[in-house]
Structures are given as structure tokens and as C-alpha cells.
Image (cartoon, rainbow, N blue to C red):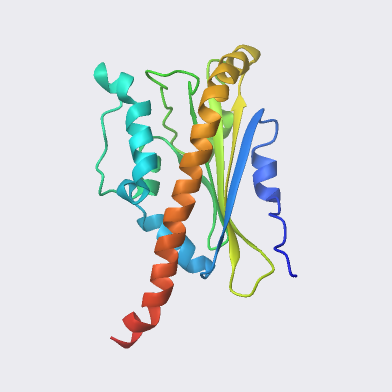
Length: 207
């Protein structure tokens, strides 16, 4: 019986996220072209991930009770929300991979103090010892089955000091399972939309 190929590493991501102390990777198989998956990624909104959306609302409830982290527009695309919150696209190699970076005091519950960067150079140079950097790779890789690909979300957090690493490690024990669940919900939402776009494609062209 044929088996799927293992999920390969991204050399680009490994180079960017080197020395990250905290990592996780989620991957699901998708029967859709890579172009459809990245288009779906641009279109997925929070209500497409209902349980993950609810978990996020609960996660940020303490901050909202003191007037921070106000809820965003539920109709806005998830990727757009990330960019507005300080996530920077570090490398864009669609339809193969997008690599993003962000920084903040990610170990904090109430206010993670996201840092806004003007460009990649500013992000690379940032080294405040009280912060962590978060790197994410959203990519497509072959499974070995015709018409099917792995849709991968890999993330890595680099604490910028020993103290920051110690603080984030406590947070990581709690947040890692929730992060894995939310990542899988996002990938499933992208898969559903990508497969829908693939079915609709010929009909749109002939309309």
C-alpha cells in the first residue's frame, strides 16, 4: 500500500528561525492546487474557524476587560488581521511558502505588547531582551499522491534573553496544546475553502 511522503523541512524557514527554543508543526493533506490553497488563505475569516475563534475570545478576555486587545472585524481575513497586529511578511514565495515574523512580550497574558516594524531590516535588528520573536511558515509540500499536497503551518518562538526564555517556557506549557488546535482549525478552514474554489474554478471561467 502506498504511503504519503513525510512532511519535509523548509530550508528557508530553518535559516530564518534558527536558535528558536520553542517549536511546533501541524500538517494536513489537501486535494487542491497550491494556488487555490494560498488564495483560500487570503480569504479565510475567523468565523470559518468557529471553535478556534471562541478559544481566542476566551484567551484575550482578561485583556479586553481592562480595555486592551479589542475584538477585530469578524469579516476581515485572518491573514489581514495578523498583518495589522504587527506580523510582517519576511519572505513571500507563493504558491509555495509564506514566512512571517512578529515580536512582543508573548509570555504575558494581559498585554503582549506587539512591536510594529517598518521593514524586514528593522525586524532582524530588534533584540530587546524582554521580548520574544515568533516565526511562522505556511507552505505546501508534496505528499507523493497525485493532486494532493501537504498544507503545513510551522511556528517557532525565539526568546531574546535567558529571562525571556524562562518566562515564555511557563506560558508555552499552557499555550502549546491550544496553539496546535487553532493551527489545525486554520488549516482545515483553508482546505475547505481551497477545495471549494477548485470545484468552482471551471464554472467561473465558463460563466
